[in-house]
Amino acid sequence: MSQIHAWAATTAGGPLQPFDYDPGPLGEEEVEIRVEHCGICHSDLAMVDSEWFPASYPLVPGHEVVGIVTALGPRAKGRSIGQRVGIGWHTGSCSHCQFCLGGEQNLCGQRQPTIIGRHGGFADRLRAHWSWAVPIPAALDPAAAGPLMCGGGTVFLPFVIHSIKPTDRVGVVGIGGLGHLAVKFARAWGCEVTAFTSSPSKREEALALGAHKTVSSVDLKELKAAAGSLDFLLITVGASLEWDALIGTLAPKGRMHMVGVVTDKMAIKSGGLLSWQRSLSASPTPPPALLARMLDFAARHQILPHVERFAMSRVNEAIEHLRSGKARYRVVLDADA
Image (cartoon, rainbow, N blue to C red):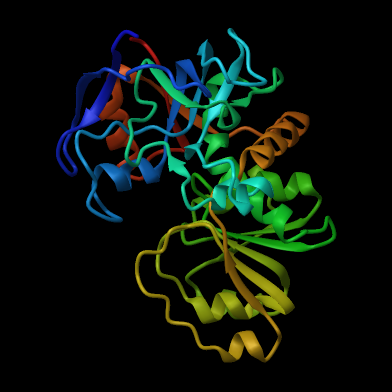
């Protein structure tokens, strides 16, 4: 196989540079895709910066990939040459543990993240186990579909695992890369949607995305006024917030669910949970079957992220645009190798 041409960070926080590597023989159950588009996620920045843990370099980011299948291993199933697929946070799992056999491959102890211990999608080609290369519905614009493979799946999974009903009152904290998609999904789900934001300028944007109303996520008076009003509260940001006040916005038996990566310790008083039988939970990105289900739902309701597109050769400019907080709301790289 020919070398893969990619963009890699060689030091923590450093600029990405052209990087070629030999992927070796295609695995028996792998597919290789020609990358068309790849989103940039804050998780990519965290890996480039060694924010979560010391990363190994050179590091090729990119885990919101849309591309065309160009090669199939002899035991790859259900995929065909020329098919458009998406690849998200994972590219493989063991396929034989209780979680894999139960359709929860995202909880497999041997799951393989796309950009940890291997090279990702800031490249001209990428490989994955066939089951993690999820077909992209024809009704979705492939240039904008990449962020659905991570951000979209991340905010969709809680609606499924917690059986959110169309009659539920749902709050979304943070109107950014994850949050703006969460608002769209919650509105299409049929829920009454309240958007929580620390930015006054985003209130009108949240309403335009589909929220029915907005609340400040940092104003204690507004949070108190919303007390007891929600059945489900989705936290999509990694910032430290007024956790007890946010829990207070839940109705009895309400749930606060985390999908944002909060790196600081969370100080929470248990009284606000136990007195009203409220719950606190979290979830990662979904397994392949739920990624496919999310894509079908997104295609039916034409849910796509708001994206800003850059040529992959301008990757460092695109990263700085995201890092500066200026992105509205996802950044996508278009392969131009």
